[in-house]
Every structure is written in C-alpha cells, then in structure tokens.
Image 1: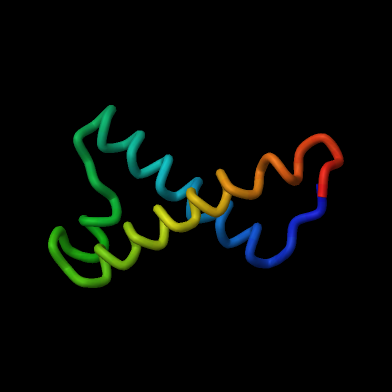
Image 2: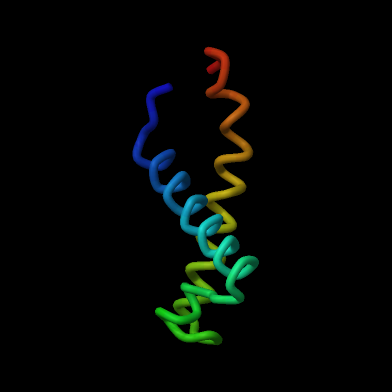
Length: 69
C-alpha cells in the first residue's frame, strides 16, 4: 500500500490520538493537555485534527486494503 502525504498525516494524527488515549486510560495523563494547556485553543485544534485524521483513515482504509482503489 503506497501512502500519499494526506495518508501519512492522517496516520500520524491517529497514532498520536491513540497514544494519548492510552496514556489517559492507563495513567490518567493527557499529554496534549500537558503540552498545550488543558483548555487552550491549540489543544482543541489538536483534538479536532486527530478526530478528522481518524475519520479519514476509517473512510479510506477499506479502499486501500486488498488492492481496491
């Protein structure tokens, strides 16, 4: 599977979101909130971008797996 730039960005955002949720669940530690501030605008933007990245991955994974285009 060859990934373009948008695929890579969505993948990275999804991994970041997954790791952040893993930290929240396991250690009650929100890395994004720690870095950017709990209620800051940039934190909210990061959360929205992670969500959009996950939606993109969900929407495109079926068309990229198994040789479908």
